[in-house]
Image 1 (spheres, rainbow over the protein chains, first blue to last red):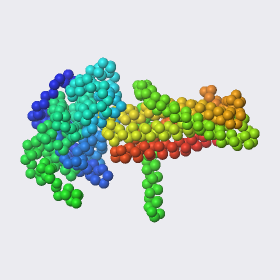
Image 2: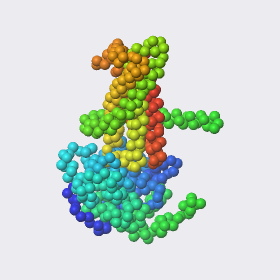
Image 3: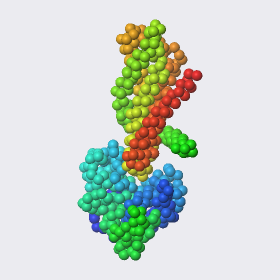
Image 4: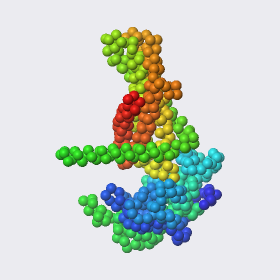
Length: 274
Length: 267
C-alpha cells in the first residue's frame, strides 16, 4: 500500500464490495481459548476475506475481544490454528509473531494511547521504534495520518485533553501509520454520541474503500454493523454460529441470533439471572 | 483454619513467591538482551534519571540527615559514658558507607520508585497500553523496562553517595552540639576510618562495597516494580495489589541481599 493513497476528505459511501476478493486474510481453525475455568472461545472456525469489512457481533462477554487478540497473537489459543496470510502464527516464536503483527493495526476500545506522549508522539511511536527516519519524514507521515482521521493540528494535545471519540481517532491514525493490511477495531463506537459514532464509522468505511484495508470490527451495536459490514458473524457460546451479509443476518432463522437482534434474553440468560 | 488449610495456604504463598521470583529473573534476562539499545534511548534514560533521581533528592537528604542524627544521639550517649565520644566519626563513617547509606537509600526508593513503577506499568497494563505496544511490535521490555533498570542502576549509587554525605554531616552536628566533639576531629576520624582498607579504582573498600550494594538495590527495585506492574490484572484493584506486592517484595529483597552482599565482602 502506498501512503500517497490518502485523501483529504472522507468518503462515507457504505462499502459495496463483497469483500474485494475471496482469498482468506485470517483463518481461525478449531480455536479454543480457556480463561479461568471457562472456554471463552470453543472450537471456533472463522474466515476473514481479503479487503472486506467483517463485523463480529455478540453479547457483552461473549469473547469478541478475545477473538481479536487471538488473531493478532496477543493471546495464544489452547488448541487450534490461527492463519494470517496462510502462515500459522500459533507455531511461531514471539519474535516472529512480532513481524507478522506489522501487517496489523489494532484500534483499542479506549484508544490505549500512551498517556505521557502527545498525540503526535503516540502516532509517531511505531516509526521511531522501527525505522530510522528523519524528523521531517516522521512529521510528514504523522500529519498525513492525523489529516486522514480529521485531527489536523491536534498533534500537540495530550491524551488527557481528548474526548473519547478523539482518542479513538488517534488510535486509528496510529494503527494506520505502517499502512497495515488488516485493521482490527475493538468496540470502535461504543460510548460515543451519534455524531462521533458516525464519524468513526465513516473512517472505517473509508479505510476499506480507499486503501483496500481488510477490517475486522467487534461491536454489539446493530446499526453500526448493518452500516459498515460486508459480512457479519454472530458469536455465541464461543463459536461463530451464523455468518452472512447484513441482509442475510437479519433474515436468519437462528433463534439465538434473533433473540440478540430483537433484544430478548434467551433461556440461558434468564436462568443465570434467577 | 485447620492444619491442612494452613499448609495449603502456605504452599500457595510459596508457589506464588517462587513464580514471581522466576518471572523477575526472566524479566531481568530479557532486559539485559536490550542493553545494546542504551545509546539510542539515552534521552529517555536522562529524563527518567530526573524523574526518579533528582526528584528523590529532597526526601533522601531529609531522611539521611535525621537518620544520622538519631544514630549519633543513641550511640553518642553510650560512647560518652565510656569516654569514647571522639570515636563517633570512626564508627559512623564505616556504618554509613558500608550499610546504612545504601540501605536507607534502598528503602526510600522502594517506597517512592518501586511503588511508582508498579502503579505506572500496572495502569498501562489494565488500560491495554502494554497490549498496544505489543500490537505495534514494540517490546515493552525494550521500551519500558530496560531504560528503567539502567536508570535505577545509575541513580541509586548517586543517591547513596548523597545519603552517606548528609548522614555523616547529621551525625557530626549532634556529635558537636550534644557531645562536644569538634567538627575537625569528627571529620578527621570519619575520613581515617574509610582510608584504612584496600582500594578499587581509588575507592576505599567501605565505599565501593556500599556503592555495589546500591547498584544491586537499584536493579532489584526496577525489576520488581516493573514486573509487578506488567503482571497486574483486574482494573484499579489489580493495580493496587501490584503496588503493594512490589513494595513488600523489594523491601524484603533489599534486606536479604544486603546481608548476603556484606557476607560476600567481609567474611
